Length: 290
Image (cartoon, rainbow, N blue to C red; front, side, top):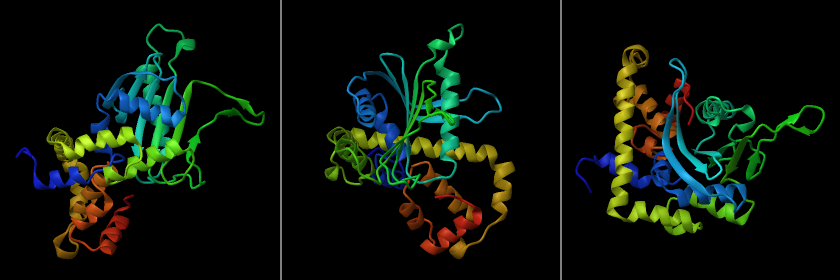
């Protein structure tokens, strides 16, 4: 292992699963076969050929607008766009976040200058979820638009699909979702995902790449905190003092890492110095989701 990685970064890298944001982006980077496999299984189609894959695509169109970093953006041979996002926990406002993803995808890529609206590129937003966000017992939730009161389809070329590992359905999809949330690659039932995970978990080169991704995230996160420390961090930093000297800022930082997919909730609690009850109580006081 390269010495530039800290013990904590190495431990985090080795604890990640495919459903974790940092690991998924690393695994999907330039990996056309993997991305094509995921899309084919989700859509239950064999006629899709992915020709390009981008990960960590940063979309920031307007100066004062909220930027978005996509987990994985695939393009097929017909120009159709597939944005794949991994979602471990049932965070609030997922529907509105997906709406924003879709709008930025359209603004950046779907229609070039001078091209007629009828030529707008078809888009798919695919959300891979560990939990059942809608609590309806389904495996796949496909958004279907209609003219209200007439049962008439409203087709605009924008497709949104949510898939969860919490419920069963098609066997091939069951195996893929099980493999995305599994901790041990030896227990994975999807051969494509299993093969990718084995590379990152059992080879020096793969191990280094995941550690590098964790390290880079930590650096960017630190830079972001430094940029906002005077305004936002000042108010947060005033509230100090929990058991054993642990600050609310520490809990906030750990939960940000959890929600971004870099560490698990159990790992955050174990390394906070707090009991599980105190950790969750502090998070609740801060109004943080996990």
